[in-house]
Length: 272
Image (tube, rainbow, N blue to C red; front, side, top):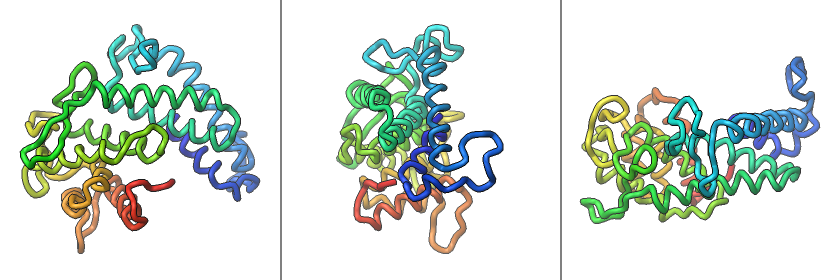
C-alpha cells in the first residue's frame, strides 16, 4: 500500500510524463500512460485501505489512534506498535500526498492526515519519556507499544526514527526539528558505547534478539544527524560510511546520500 502510494506520488509530481507511454507496454492493464498507471496504483491502494486495513485490521474508535481490531490475528485489541504505526503511516502519507497532487478526493486526504496527526500526537504526548542525559542534553526513551514508555529496542527504534523523519519531512503535521534532536542525543550520549558499538535498547542497556548490542549504527537513525550536525561524521562512520572504504549496506548508503543531499541544500528538510 505504501509502495503503491509512493510510486503514484512520484509520477503525479512529474507532470511531464503524464501522457508518456510506460515502457514495456501494458500487459496487465494497469494503464498505458504514466498518469493512468498512477491512478490505478492509487485506486488499488485505497481499495486495500477501505476493504481491509480500516475495515477489519485496525480500530480507530479511540480518537483515531491505531489499535488492532479485537479479532486481529496479532495483538488483537491492543495498540499497534510504533514501528508498525510508521509502516501504516508510510502508506497513509503517500496516499494523502498523491491524492492532493491529483486533486481528486479531498475528503480522503483529510481522513489520512487526521489518522497520522492523531497517532503522532499520541506518541509525542503520551509515548515518550523525556529526561536530561549524562551530557546534559535532552533525550528520549519510549516503548515498543503503548502503554510502555521505555525500553524500545535498537532494531525497532531505527524503524520508529525513520518514520518520524518521514512525517517531519512532509511538513504536514507540525513536527519540529527541535522535537527530533533528542533522538540524536540519545543515540550519541546513551546508546553509543564506543566506536561502532551501540546498546541494544534506547536506555543504554542490552539484551538478546532485537535488543542485542550492535557493532554498527542502524540506518534509520542516520536521518537524526540532520538535527544534531556535530553527529554527522560519527554517525556515518559508525554506519559503515567511511572515506576510502566500500559500503556494504544499501540501506545505510542510500540514507547517507539523502542526508548528504539535505545538508548540501542547507537544511534538515529535503523536498522529494
